Length: 610
Image 1 (spheres, rainbow, N blue to C red):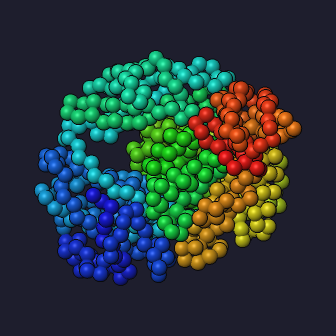
Image 2 (cartoon, rainbow, N blue to C red):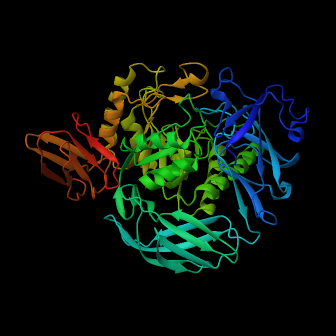
Image 3 (cartoon, rainbow, N blue to C red):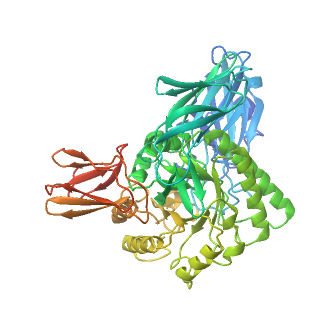
């Protein structure tokens, strides 16, 4: 219904005065398919300004007397909407978060015409602010548009909170009793929990209830369930998972097990064929590449499409999603602080409303590199932290700092449930001693886990190419493994990425060369090194045998249900290993492939064709 649109740019901003909202777009508008951005079209790579879209549709059967909403997966950035010439709403200051628009009052029986005005101009009233961000800002309907028809007394949107009842920490808990609590927009009578098509529990909607045993969601075992929430007139179905992820002193705990995790960050919107309008198939292709670099923990600087989180739910990846507030570009004064808190509140509300049912998301981020030593910044970030905690008390909240090393005891890095630090010693940060500054941070850290949220080498700002990236990766990981307070590392980045502040290329090829793959996803030599450094095991080859050792440093977690397949097709399940344990298996010298229990790749031999 909402895939084919007419589109036209409006550099003189004359569409309103020419009456396009009422009369429709002019004949010169061209046809496009959603998701779409004009910034990958020839001659419009640097375009920032008004973009108009128009589509026609037939009102759904049975929609009369019902609530009708349009759901936008993401529109970059400001949007105003007219239905049949009538203004029906707007969405400002947030270009990546999903949102809904109620069009009940404007809907006509039969054919309807929807006209949108989108504007991707730099803005001092939006997040990200002006040019203070390091990613692509392609304008348009960058994600899908759908319609939902709801009863006036319907269940509406549902949030499922699944809280595993895990006792003491130590070993990984595979299954346990889980408390279920439901929040819904409308009246609810009953909640039914299904394991695939098998009903496993029913409970009331007005109070929490307990399911006696559920398999817990884990990056190696991403088990999902369905909740069917029934009201007086309809029902809503939600997919969810049950998992427990929290901080316990300076360590992370996942489903009862103390873990240290590794990952890498991917910067979407970077393939110049798609820009920020990547189709679902391409998103899933890159997600697979991300996971098979042995990334089980990642971070997104801005809100992502549901297709990405659906993939992470099904394949197992822990994710932090962040409000796109980067660089601290705000004017001093209480009025500006109040504005930033309010616009951040709107971001947080949309993030939680859209994504709270994804078990892959374990932390909300309040911002990145925002002058974290200033009292006003800390005040803003503390307020946003508290907004997230009120909206979603079951997830962690964090802030990402690049000023942590100046005065660790006063830095905003400490406002969250863990301390996320960008560490670019030897590149962007010169003349500092990492050992000394990390000692100062761990002394001041008040028992919080540390996440190295960015480290790596950016070309052409720094020389050496991919060999320098490999050396940096190996040496930094060696150092991080010696610091027990580091609970996770996230290498930056998976890919070279398109960005409006890129040092290399022009137009839609403007980019930063920061990745282990290029902007098209082609792997560099550093990708294989990244895969080996982030693998939970080390495989040692010897004549007639393979020795598989479960890492006991970083990453660090139990290896359960892994298999190894050799070139002749023989598969062997590896005995379960705790950190530090090892096993030997017979080996004929052929290529091999080691996989997680859900089938994701861990390691292959140099000679493997599997």
